[in-house]
Image 1 (tube, rainbow over the protein chains, first blue to last red):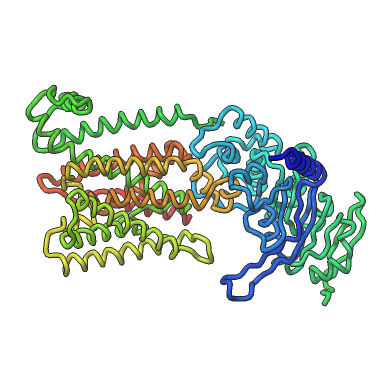
Image 2: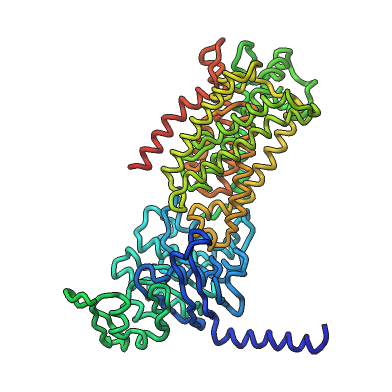
Length: 289
Length: 346
């Protein structure tokens, strides 16, 4: 290796650090197509979508059912390979990471099916440390401290010794979030975390998320159906319709009445709330065409 | 919060090893020749320490030579079936999964019967010929679990009820093929139909086969144990486990192959014994918790203890006659299966 190439390599590394200090997550023109067999036309396509996010930023992905929200989240997580484009986390393509490396950088919170066998909340939370050791490893004091801290951060210390099948939906969602925190991720992905939660539990979960993103410098991407909660708690909104990304920007820029009415196929009114963020209300009885 | 430690795993296994030793001594005592428990315990330790000259009585020698091999076989088969059952329950996220219910044991039995039919027609060195039956049983087990896995999927996801039905149907279909083969094609006595369909521990194992089976068992069980942490995460679902850093395809492959090896080994020497792989993991989970780092080794000991007890009952309750050990385990296991099914549906 010559001095010149070494210099340029060092320069590239420097550029990469500089870029990451600005944008941590960079979704660049990713697309995807589902098809049951290669000869047939795809059943569903996600057209090129792009957006960037910094540390401590919350991005909400909105859109009607079957608009490609979960597909976009899977692409970001690196669980599926994009047909074109790429998703970079600190300059590294997420789909190129090994499961273990990925789990140390990206945590996913999703609707979990019930466990077939009983586990206590603390056992469940400690499982988030899996990516930091061999499969047959026994947790050390550091893992235990991290798990305790994670439970405290989501306000679930009182659930530590409870069984997972004996706690409420909102409590379970907190424990699942705590497990994601023990992964010590840079990127936290959530797929409809507020589904099946009452309004109090929804607000409380998003407040926690807001606080954690600021305190731990997570970049957060959350898929949700809750327009008002997304407006209230997110820095950026990605609006999807039928696999196309219609608009990306701060909530005030995306929440345009005509746009939302067209996307969600219903009459809506959009006002500015007391917090300075948009508020959406439904106008019953007047189905827009 | 009481995180699991290696010390706790070893301590629990130590306790179970002592229980197993006591059960073996009691099992040795039952039979036509009366011997004292105390003398038997001493003799057994002598055998373990390879000091056979120190065995106290002639009767003791008889007991050690005749009854002990059968008990050792029960220990090995019980442990293999129980570990295989634990693995299938974790991998399929199904508390009712076990090699017998899923038809894997029947597949292994069919593979073994086919190997026995083919054996006289091909010229192989004797050492290889001896391994043909366990190999056939392994291939039968692996093919069955693969097909049950495919049949049990609905819309790309494993469905608990579809999987169980697929397993039960496969089991009865394969048993029918075994019955067909044994009644039409086989002129020689291949241990008899009852052996393959119900299980039997009374047929002595060839001495040279013992070591090969023992070592293979140890390797397969160890391979499953290395994935213990992954199996804990797989209980949350395959997608979830992947996001937590589990290399799901690799773990699935390792556990499927190793569990098929264990089932194949057990079936090739004892036929299709039911319910050990279903019942024992549940009892151990109830006592020690659901963490596979403690569940897998304790299930191995538990399976050994359960099958030694079942076999002792099988050869003593109607003495001097004997009932197949599989009938014994079904007598205890079937009601438990019903209980678990009801509890799930409740």
